[in-house]
Image 1 (cartoon, helix red, strand yellow):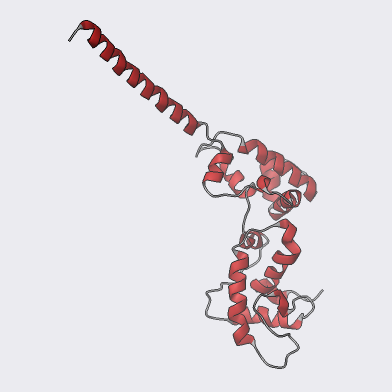
Image 2: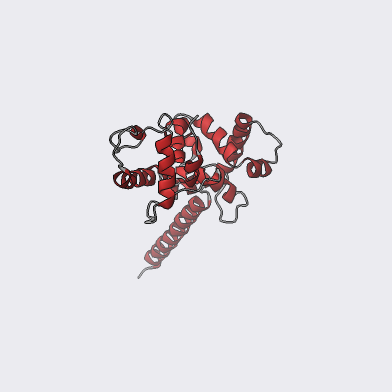
Length: 219
């Protein structure tokens, strides 16, 4: 084999190795440059900042949901909910742009306060005890059910998809109603909490699907 051919092969091998090193470095660089926003999106989180409507109200409700801890996180004494929500939004936007790292000191705060949460999570933050749909002991469910039965204007049966009739009916339908209510509660509590739907979704769920619902009087 001539020196020319050997030299060409050597250069080709070196070029391939260099190309592989460059490509590997490029891919590694892409991995290292992933932002916290990208990491959360890839992990299945939905960001508050990605809401197409109701974003301002969502930040306000997020601030209200854990005000003391969020104020400490932000290093602010702001107590007004809307202004606090704006501060939280700014904090989140800045952190979401940071490079992702498991050791990032703000990662837990971002996961706690910059992403959408379920209705159940919102209820728990408010100190409410969510009833378990799988519970075969219906004592707590019945207590809440009976309270709803006594607040006919606040909680008509029509609020629950699948319930029929009205509270004024003389027939006791509790045994038929409870499985329907449990199924409805399971679906609603696992859905995302949306501030814009607070009155139409969150409040009825609080009234029908929590132990605390047994104490909610007609307004």
